[in-house]
Length: 465
Ligand SMILES: [Zn+2]
Ligand SMILES: [Zn+2]
Image (cartoon, rainbow, N blue to C red):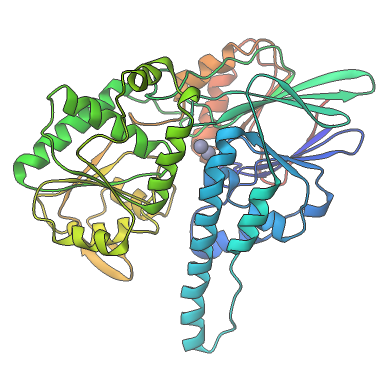
């Protein structure tokens, strides 16, 4: 059999890999959106180097857009097979893919407006709402820890990734000339002790694996530091009379922040200031979370069994309407505003940044991974002036950056996981910027159980036997 690396090679976003068995079965693993500069993104997301109609099945690890967000384009171009995912991933995609389609349509509108003025031709959105809805219909929900036959010669098993709700690592069992080859897809790998989530499950006894390397050469502070930093940031800003603006992913990070704030307020460590979740997507996603309490860890289960709700306590207001969102611009009391998009590339967060970035009483808190060339990355990198919605703004607000919230394993956690895999013939390092992937590969070379390590380039193809 062969594997062809189609995305997230020496880069983080746009995960996409094609497995082709000796029997000719084509399995696509993830079909994520590449996120970066506009023109490059449009080109990379539009083109598939394989014919979507030739794919027999798609396996989706989790709902994050950099793993799921190009599925509607695959369907638009003719894919009609099944998309295998876990039950919560299916539920999350019901909101995330239409939201992504909406952003694609808006993006095309924006470009077309400019093109019209310049007499340039009109463009089509990457995909539309109806493509997203067609995609959702193809997703087949599954539970964890059982083998699922997806083709005559391929079975898969989803196991806990500990990354976001419903995220799974995937085991592939391929039958070839009477022998079985086992491949593990360890992307994205979460961390132990994250709030809400169960710990990642250790995979063992495989022949080959693909592993992520987002933080392949970095170490995180322990997750407890995230809670402490949130406490300090909220208190400091509160005493200045300012607001805390947090660009946050609608999935997991928003709910994690609520979980910590709920605890901190319960423990009397921060004042009971108002908390606004200003993102219609985050509101919908939080509703999905409350439907899957049995996928959470025991501690969260206990909170619910006490009749408590970490997402629905008294100070939290979920903002759906645009009018209410605009009212927040005139809010004159300290508050926490959590808004999307997570990398501050689009959505309501842009208006909150415009309104608050030039006031030194306020704090912008960066709590997620920020891809290169995004506004969030520029803020995290300490730029003194940034461009938002076409205008320039001085960054006078305090900017606080924390990687402690990360839902990705760090270097040591990745190494420990790789070390516990048992004997592996070849480990492929994907889903990490080039320096992170290469440094991680160097560290893996010291592990005795990994025979060979390889950092693929996009379009590389390797035979696995
Ligand atoms: Zn992810
Ligand atoms: Zn990812």
